Length: 112
Image (tube, rainbow, N blue to C red):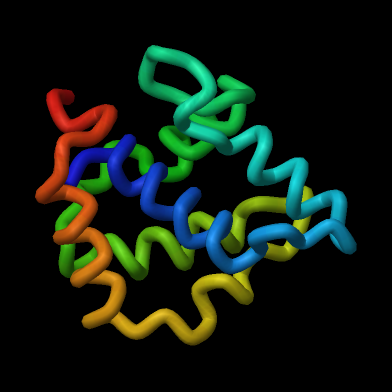
C-alpha cells in the first residue's frame, strides 16, 4: 500500500461515516479539501492537505498491517474538525478487508 492509497482509504472512511452530514460544515470542508479525485494528479483538492499528510508520514513504511494505526494517528492531526469518530469503532480485520478489496481493483495511484 502506498501513501496515496492510504490517503484515499482514509478519505473513503471519512466520507462514508459523515455522508450527508449537513449539520457540521467543518466536516464537509475537510472532505472537500481532502478529495483525492478532484484533480488528475496524485494529491488532494486542496494540495496543502496532501502535502501535510506526507509530512505527517515522514517516509514511514505503510503495510496493510500498520495502515489502520497510521490512519487513526493521521486523523488526530486534522485540526479543522474532529473526524476521529469515523475510526473509533473500526475493527482491524474489517479495515484490512476494505483495503484488500480496494487494492484488488483498478484505482488511481496504484502505479506509484
